[in-house]
Amino acid sequence: MVRAAAAADRAAMPDTSFLTLATDVAPLVHALRAADDTFGPAPHTMYGWAADELEERGAPRPGWPDHALLLVYQGVVALPEAGRFAADVGRLVRLMAPFPHLAWLVSAALHEHLMPGDAWAVPLLLDAAQGAGTLAPEPAVRALAVIGDRAVVDPLLDVVSQPRHRVATSAALVLGRLRAREAAAPLLGLLGRRRDPEVVTALGLLGVREAAPVLHALLDAARLARPSRRTERDAELLAATARALGRIGDAGASASLRALLDDPYVDVALAAADALTRLDDPDGARRLHAHLYVWEAARRLAQLGHADGVAAMRACYRADPNARPRGLARDPGGRRLLLQALGHEGDAADLAFVHWVAAHDVDRTEQGWTLAEEARRAARRIEARASDARRWDS
Image (tube, rainbow, N blue to C red; front, side):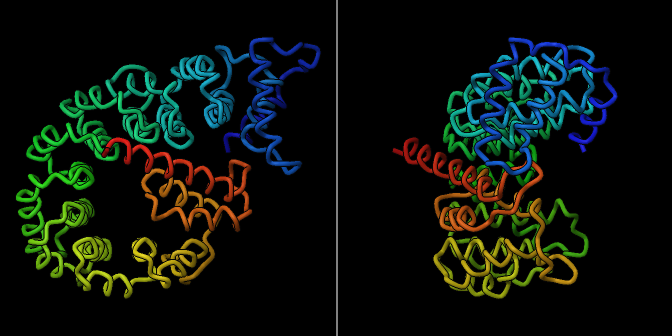
């Protein structure tokens, strides 16, 4: 949609072919064309679309339409060497400030395209996390987890104490993914104020055993309440609590977790099953096998080395079990979302599946590149995160 609007806008412009390309965007256009060329003679990728805009319009400046600015920005931040053009990214962000409806998309593009080690984006993201700048803070905070820079831990600890609920809980989740053990006490304090799935998940990722009494209380209260009276948020909190107890390794939770295996909310039942597999309780794997058609169940069994889990994960990737009729082919956009989630949250146990996709799926995404390329990006994120975790734990 953005690309079509930009093309229509350019078509309405007067002929500017007599103008020479501004020298300050020539290196950027060259980088975009080079990145586009790596995908062969097939139709353009988002790199090529961004280069088209720059060649047609020259250097970005006030007066550009919002869709053209966004198209160029998305192409630039997706570049493998985007850090070379950090100043251009900052300029584009400032030019989009008069368009508040773009704030979320601008932040989300960083979360979507940044790679581990992209420290050039940290100042921009921290400004958003602390309420400054023009980026939407929540996706900006989440993008910090992708970069994996431990230098952001102290600023995020400050964000956790802020009154902005969604930003504070997003910061908590990032601290959990960064394995920032110094965040344990602040997160316990936050959990005392806010019973929130992101905070619970963060404490589970950190393995904070001191959280167990509060998590047991949450689990028991939710388990005893009528499922028919639960909200979606209640179910999300219950599922997060179950998974956190499994990650913490609290064997005392086994009985309560087994009681959730038949919960009418499938997400809750699968979270309890996942937790039980981490506690070496065979009931967990049995329940997961009963839901092999669900992505989360198939993925956990694949992580545990079950051959049927690997096959089911591939089947869930190809076909959407929630579609009607069941088994309808999953479109490239849906498959890309699965790969992005693995890239942002997956671990080394997911790499075999991701490499399989990289070797087999040549369908193209809306960005113009193949799902095989998207899988390779996910693999780089997972590998970097695993390497960081080993270094931080040593």
